[in-house]
Image: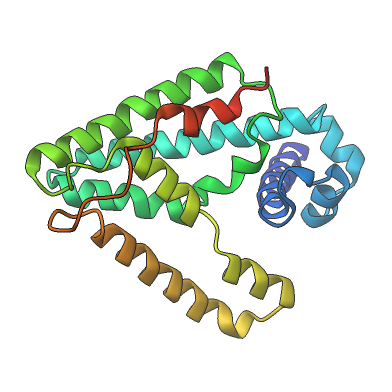
Length: 213
């Protein structure tokens, strides 16, 4: 028997997924109406669950931070430093970790978000430190490089375009091509390559965008 709680939870999952999908397509201009339509629920149902669009995006941010931290912890649990780092990157990219970048600076960063983000920074720093110490990660790669790499691959323009066109026949090939590109990028993190241009990016490039002051 389906209860009201079951329906509410199902609608919430649909809303969160719809918000992610619409963000991928429309960025910070994603509208509440478009999200509700994509989720197949009325706009009233959305506002009963989330009072504002900002509240919805804050919830998405927390879920994204939780996934980042869980993926990093799993990576650190792997005794192989390179396998752990690579699995972390693959897991974050598959989740679409960079989809929320367009809302950076447009929503208030809650204390809970800040705490989880700090924890994520610590975990990634440890993944990078461990890989450097093992000699499996080139010395000129910093933690922020990894963060930005994940953000770049967190969405695939080709996959997004094919979905819009309804070309389901090409989605599998596009997903495979995306995995190949990630593998190529990961190989570039290994030692044995020429020096990277410029200095490592600073934390402000990744974190300051979230300040709306």
